[in-house]
Image (cartoon, rainbow, N blue to C red; front, side, top):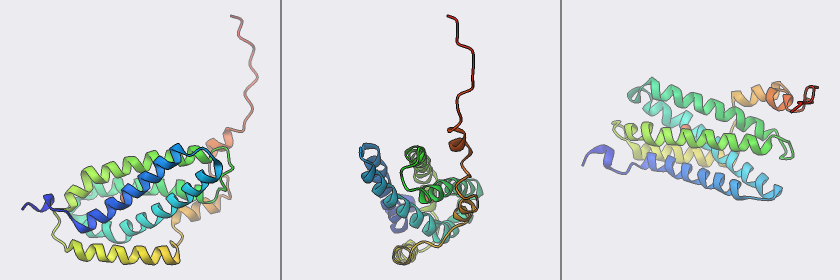
Length: 186
Ligand SMILES: [Fe+2]
């Protein structure tokens, strides 16, 4: 059988993660009370941090060369933007005016990233000549360790912490008063 048609253990692990996080995004969209929303956001942030770590530490380096820099560099930048939003949400307590909007935008970005991975990167990855069973085991073991010990701080977290809550200029600008303008006559 052609390699790309077979189910692939490492790719399946990533797709299971994708399905779990998309389910959390759907739950958030339907949630109506603050406590439930906060709980869903915390669960999604943990899922995303662990998932990004196993991809960046293990999966991406394993397939980067054969897949090519165009697809891989775009995926890197999508991770970077998502990680900035994740770091900002992590520093929030859920009562902020832009908390829900920030998580919604994160979910839209991640849904787009998942589509790109599942439609472009992962079908190509299936053709790479590596032991995907061993790759899955490596990712699984790392995932368990990260879930037990916590994900080490990433560069985006350092960036967000350094600006002490003042890094989101549009959210700051949203506090401005409307400009004084003459009333429209008609
Ligand atoms: Fe990814």
